[in-house]
Image (cartoon, rainbow, N blue to C red; front, side, top):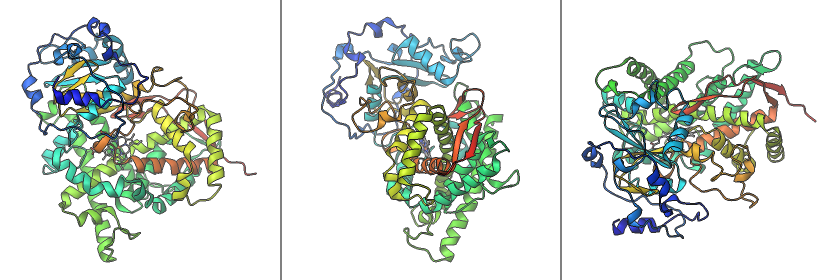
Length: 551
Ligand code: HEM
């Protein structure tokens, strides 16, 4: 191991209590089956487009973790995993007769871990190599080796759409390198910082009030909403429009006509996510011709762009007509802010489109998951309601100060993201070679961090099957959890810029629902979800909303 990497390894994690397999004499590592695939694409893999650089990390560097060089196994071919074959790689295991056929996403990745251990290699058609990781210590190692401009290679179809039909202009989801950083820096201060997100409260409070009114109209005579999820999509769309355009779209209008702009927009977001999920585990034929799935994505993304551009232009015109120049003016908006930056119109609109798109399914499923978990754990719901009653009471205006005094609400959201995460894990392409649990993995390899799986293992989270928000409260009553187990919004400079927006929108919605209703889950079956880039709820979220009894 080079001196530089010895040094990197030496700045270890502060979580000493967790066992590291790399310290063992590796019997488990050597016992598992070896991959004999000749990695013919190794030249391609080492062609990293980025300068080798080490990611800065703010973690405590108190303990020393040095892997003896003799225990490090080099090269992808040495990593355990299913046997790959030329051209098809390991994809056959997902087809009938294969060991992963017909399984849910979570069951597949759990099976891979069970069969091969904490580091697993898969070869995907098209010469792509994936390394699955199941140890939080290795997650830290990934972020140390993600480079100055972290890369998350995903949304390949969307990338192709942008290249082919958006004049080669990308937002931040599909861009990389300096181009990614330039765009991200333009929007970071407006969306990602907690203080700036609070400035959207005056616009988002009325959205949450309207959602409560909307729910009252959606209930049947028994107070039942047959499926809350579509209503939550409307809420999230209306609320993210406040952030993106400082504008109401009308998604929560009572008796809004089918086929409204908001409805078509929501359907388009779902179509893009569905097409993107279909990329995984299939041959990338869309690179050769416009496949039906690619055409579906193109249609949906074109609509997302159309709605974004229309609303962004209106927002810019609004600021011009009112001569609003200052960003801190209450009537200022994001498109106008970007219009005054060095980005071209197309770059700005594509960037805003990413946020508009990113803010729909994520937030709505998060709220759905939290509601479900609370209903399944009524004692936790009672504690949360008490906190809300004490801090906010029946006030309609939720202030920035209120948010700072709701630790249990934060803990509930966090625990929900562990038990029923919106994002199952994280993805990076290594900028530099790295060592994971004793295996050297070359630069350019895609690594998948299985946070959902790790968060459900008793060795990392005690009583993992129980919904215990208290474990996240900093009162010393529960043992600390490894800081890389739960990374629902990713990590580092490429982490989710919409995190604070999502948390704020979800909190507002949950507060208002608990202020107004007694809520019960009343579907006969447990909730089920399916991986469509995010974990999406696929069974009806049937709740009874009774007006809350006032003292
Ligand atoms: C429950 C809510 C959400 C979850 C769990 C979530 C999760 C994530 C994750 C895991 C990533 C990848 C981070 C990484 O690679 O380190 C991400 C990226 C992203 N998210 Fe979110 N997200 C949520 C809500 C939102 C919202 C509300 C928006 C828009 C306001 C948004 C916009 C984005 C964008 C644009 C990216 C790409 C960032 C980049 O590549 O630089 N997300 N999100």
